Length: 271
Image (cartoon, rainbow, N blue to C red; front, side, top):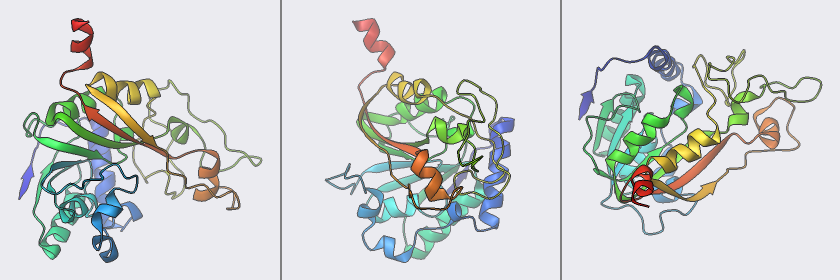
């Protein structure tokens, strides 16, 4: 089922919406569907950290800002009832194509991640959220909406670009990466001048500090249970390459959080 939400979008959202549609058209690496071999054991692929030991069969799962023919189909293949929300119509079309080819049921919404009014409160057992908070200047409303649609004790598994990843240069200067953007600067980071897997082409990205990311998740009503920092570094890689830069600057953080029965603000009032 294909459902669209045409609410008023900010200039930043529209800018990134167009960028991701272009990425699909040019076959960018981040806009490619899951491979055949990944469907042989989808739970192993989606749960490399071992955070879902009992599986997700029968779960209601929201794949937030997660179109592209990968996350939604893999979670559906692992037994979940899946809803995908993404701002890019082209990314959602990849989901529908893969679902149709593999006879998987997916519900899709074209909408921005900070406005999920089309979804019911406490509707989902789990929300998975790949790297995407960097595309909005503020993230507090995103976390509040995720908390609203997640049932008490439900899981929120999210990935976020490390602040330093967005602050630092992509190329080396006299053998070193340099800080190009201030930690507390809320304007967009400098655009990438050349194709790079660490920075999606022609997108508008923002640095979010740990107070906004980790603190924001907790204040919205979640308790963080675990954190994973995938290591893509290669000390022997060529300077300026993906592996070399990741050896010095971790690209992103993966967070497992559990929904409490009430917001952090409410708990403080009760205390």
